[in-house]
Image 1: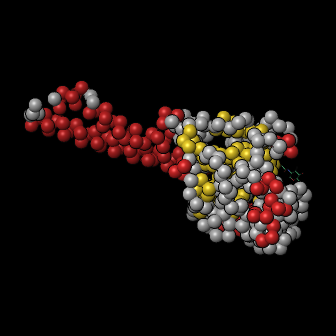
Image 2: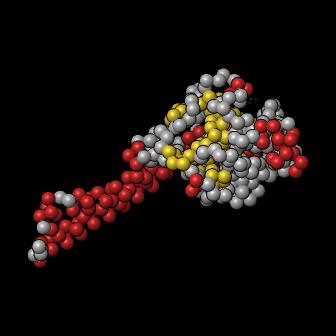
Length: 372
Ligand SMILES: *[C@@H]1O[C@H](CO)[C@@H](O)[C@H](O)[C@H]1NC(C)=O
């Protein structure tokens, strides 16, 4: 059946209008995505000006205390006490078959739809945060009014956050402990949490479900990472091995984490430092967090005594038949999960919205009548 010229003209007009409206919707969506990305960090009070000047680096700090208990010097990241030797230095678990980190081979991962991880109290400002140079990393210990916890997300229990720390390298192309298809990131943050069913860390370290660690990959960017900026003064003051300082304006844990926490790799592994306890349920987020070159250099400047820590990543360990899962939510779940105020809805929204008006018009009775 042929459409008359008038009908064709009308159809063209309808299509033009539809395209215009859909393009407009597309613009709005882009704008919305931008604001959503920027607003969350912007909403927090502006980062404080640094009190420390570049020349004032460490040693003289009155409030620097050297009371860290895990300053174990008997292992290191190179030489005689390097990672290949750990198991011969008395840390027998380091040669086990459930070791971390690993290289994630993306075409061998098993796809799963774990429920989203539930984050509790991650938007809190810590009451107290100490940053410590423990001779092999920069480690933050925290005190909270309400302890941040994670649960669900396929985790074998509920876990409370106990500390976070970092792994880095000397150059931008190495540094992370986990690698993805052999690729490294310059920095990896580990948020360590302990199963709430164990009271003591020493007890949790004896059980396969004792700890859950979230691994967050950082990428170098010029964009200012405000949460990381809050750690800068403390990092400048713990250059010396053993130094520990209080962080004046501690960031929220949430602001150190990726925006999208729905997409992650999951596997059973271990601590990546001696004693290499095989008690860790690992979560590695696909989305990265940004760090500036200048901030990265603060980690690289940290020293053991007197040499720099330099690099503190353990190389990837054999998988020994363990499964590595990739969890990504089902399409319809994407709308409702993620941190409050930072949901992933905008991501999935864009294509649906642009297709919307056009599809609606084409299937409307008017369009049907015009066409046939
Ligand atoms: C921070 O360090 C001080 C001084 O050593 C200590 O009293 C306090 O318990 C530490 N707090 C945390 C959360 O690590």
